[in-house]
Each structure stands twice: as C-alpha cells, then as structure tokens.
Image 1 (cartoon, rainbow, N blue to C red):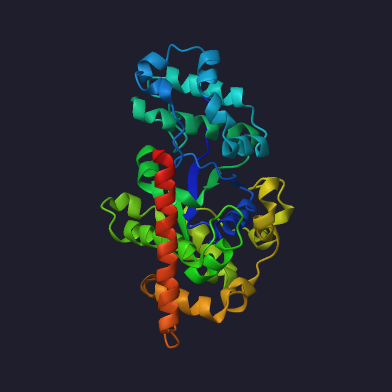
Image 2 (tube, rainbow, N blue to C red):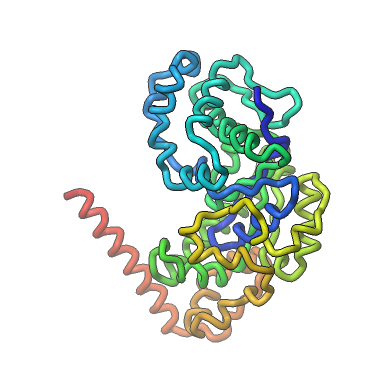
Length: 348
C-alpha cells in the first residue's frame, strides 16, 4: 500500500479572512504540500450508488464501474481544479480507492493517516485517503498535506472523526475587513448586511467550536490565529503555526509565495486571490476604514459589535443614528422579500 502523508492540516475560517495567504506561506515550506480548495467535506457529492451498498459489496465492484460511479465527483469544478493543479489522473485516484476498499484494514504502519472504519459512512474517508495517496505520488518529498477550504470550518468534527490526527488552523479576521472584501467578490450576493450576516455566522461557528468542544483531543488539534497578527508579525505567527504542526520553521516561508511551483488556486480565481501571491502587506489591516463609507462603517460597528468585541476588536458606536437603524431594517426587509420570492418561484 502506498504511503500517504505523515500529517494532515486543514486551514479553515470565513472566506476572505486570509486563509489563502496563510496557505501560500505554508506552501513555501519544503515539507508542506499546500493544495487548492477541494470543498470535499462540505458538498453533498451525491454518492447514490452507496445508498443500498455496504463496503463489502463495493469491494467487488470493478475499477471501471467504480470510476463511472465517481464521474460526477471528478467533474465537480473544485475537484477538477485540484486534480489539474496537482497533475493527478482521476483514474489513478479510482485505482487507489479500489485498493483501499479491498483491504480489511487499509493502513500504513508508518503513517499517521489511515482508514480505520469499514462502513458505508467511511467511503468519504476512503476516497479522501485515495486523493492523499495520489498527491503523495506526485510530491514524494513532502510530508504534510495542507488543505485550504475555508468552509470546512463547518465540518471540523466530521473530519476529526475520520482523521483523528488531523490538525486545524482557524484563521480569524476583523469582520469589517471581511465584509469590505466580500462586497467586491463576483460570487457573493450584494448588500452590506447580507455579507455582515455571512461573516457573523462563521465567527459564531468558530467561537462555539473552540469554546464548547467536548473532545479534548480535538481541542488540542485546533489553533486559531488572527490575520492582522500574521500581517504585522509574520515571523512570530509562522513559528507558532510550525510549532503547532510540529515542524521546524523555514525561512523560505517569509519569501514571496509566487516562487512556488505548486499553485494553491486556479487561474480563474486570480481576480480575487492574486494578492496572496505577493508579499505580506500590513496595510490590509483596517482597509475598510479607507474603502467603505462612513455610514457603512458605522452600520457595521453597530451590527457586528457583539462578535467583534468577543474577538478582541475595538468598536466605535458613538456616531450611530436613527438613519443607520432604518438602513439595517431596510436591508432585512429586502432579504425577507428575496427569500419570499424564491420560495414562491420554487412552489410554482
């Protein structure tokens, strides 16, 4: 059985919080393979062929039939990007997946990442392990696989169950800067409050995860960093991250990430991720103060005050007026109308 990576790391957080920048810096380390976003655990891949199948039955499926069954998976744009950027052939992943299915206890005695369960629920684990092994074949000198899908913050407990030794780096960022960035994204709906609610959802999810974990082993496998601290003190933060991963810090991590031969995002994402390829820019801290209107800043301070304060960010509420409250309620009414129209259209 092929060796897999010795360590598995997930970079998570709210989108536009600096997760790509951190992954680029980590990818500069000679032992780390920083992958593109897979969205593997937060998308319903629709493995319909598993509904009435057990792992025992799947052991007997041919490679050709298994590959055909995984067609929609391989055609998903995020998986296509991952395979292309890592120069991996999809049929090779199927071969590795088939080999794992045929093993009663598919594990590598010298590796930490292993397949431990043989149940229908563990097929995700088997398929992801096959992706890891295919990546290892292309990156034989790398010891750590670092996957960056911000939305995997929603899947930390599931991932920990499947890969108990995996570690998670939770990147936090001032919600006002995140909203300022989200407003520029072509893939995000418009609206100040709409995007503020988006950041707040992830901020609260992260805090709940860190503050109410019942599994002490999982709690020890999560570290949180603030993007602002990375911008201001990159050496200190990167050394802290390396210590958490249990790997020696390498000076190459402070060099510009565009020197990496392995890319962590596809060309079509350059429009909004190109800054991750440039040097560390401390001016991005508090960029919302220069790029958002005064009224928008005041509204965000009021709307996000509880969550911003909980994360240690300063909030100025002195200039909040009745017109700002009207603006917030108008946004809520607009969101309600949009949802109502979607509901009506679905019912027709």
